[in-house]
Image 1: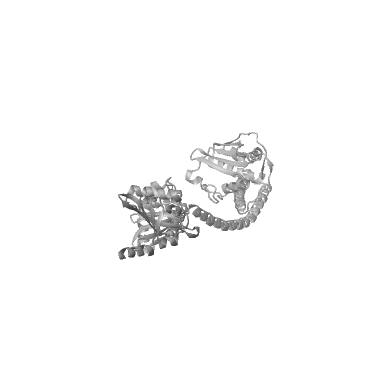
Image 2: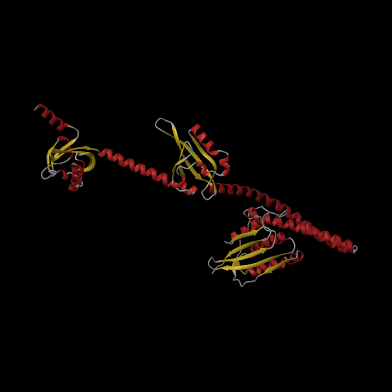
Length: 479
C-alpha cells in the first residue's frame, strides 16, 4: 500500500502532464501538472476536447496506436491551454492492456519554447538561404581540392552554368587558358590557407559561352568545430562593365587634357598659317609682275601651289582639333540629303578626276529631314575623303539611300572599292586620334560619329579587307 501511495505521489507531482482515458477518450485521471496546463471542467471530460484539432486528432492518435500496438513514444501536437492559449506538446501514449486495449495513459510535455525556437531557426535559415540564392554576386562553396559544392543563382548569371553543371566540378572549368596554365587556382588556395582569406583579388574568368569576364574574388576559409579548415566560401563579382567605365573615365580625362592642349596649339598655328597664305598670294602676284621666262614662272607657281596645298592641309587639321574640343551647337533646318551629297561631289570633282575615281550617286526620292547642313556636310565629306584615300587611284565610290519606315530612320550609305579595314581595327575606328593613315589628325571619323550622335542618329561601318568599306549614316526621319 505504501508503494502504491508513493507511486501516486510521484505521478501527481511530476513535471509532466498525465491523463488516463478510456477507449473513447473520456478522462478518468488528470495529474496536477496537467491541470495547470489545461482547463478540465464541466463538460470538458474528453481528451479530444483539449486537442486543438479535436476529435479528428484523437482518432488519428488511436489509429497510430492500433498500428504500433506498443503505443507512441513521441508525437507533437497543439492543445488548448488556459486563457485560450495554444500550447505545443510532445506526447507519448501507452495503451492499457488486458488481452485487449482498455484505455490509454497519456504523458505530455510543454515544448512551445522549443517550437518557437525551431520556427525562428527555420525562418532565419530560409532568410539566409534567400539572401544566398538571390544575391547578384556569385556565392560558391569550394572544397580543399578546389571542387565546387555550393552554387547560387548569382553564379549561374555570372558564369552561365546551372547548379547541376557546376556542382562537383573542378574550379579550373571557369579559368581561361592563361590562368589555368599559370596554376592560378592552386595559388589562390595556397594564399587563402595561409591567411584564412583572400580579399579583392582581380582576375579573369571564362563563361560557359566562352566570353572572358573581369571578376573580383574574395575567398574565405570555412572551419569545423575544432577550427580545422575543410573548405572555402567564395564571393565573385563581375566587374567587366565597371572596368570599361573606369577605362572610359581615364580616357575621358586624358582626352580633356589633350583637347585643351590641341585647342591652344591650333589657335597658335592658325594665325601664322593665315599670314603664310596671304604672303603666298602676294608672292604669286609679284612673280607675275616680274615677267620671268615661262618655264621658270611655271615652276615657281607650281611650288607656291604645293605650299598652299600643304597649308590648307594643316588648316584642315587645326579645324578638326577645334571641332573635337568644342562641337558647335546644331542649327537644324529641313534639308534634303541629296543636296548635301551633290554639294560634296561638286567640291571634290577635280580630286576625283585626278585620281580616276568614279563617283556614282544613286538619287532616290528623299523627304526633307531636320539636320544641320554644315555639320552633316562635314560628316559625309570626312567619309568620302577617307574613301578616296582608301582607293588611291582607279576605283569607285557609290552613294545611295534607304528609308526604314518601321525604325523611323533615313540612312545614307557611302560604299567604296578601296583596300578595306582589318577586322581588329574596326572597333577602334571611331576613337579620337586613331588613324590607319600615315598623315591626318585621326579625328575625322570621331567627329563624324559625334555629329551623328548630336543629330540623335547613328553611324555604322562594315568592311572587308581588300574589297572595300561601307559606312552608313542613319538620321531620325520625322513622320
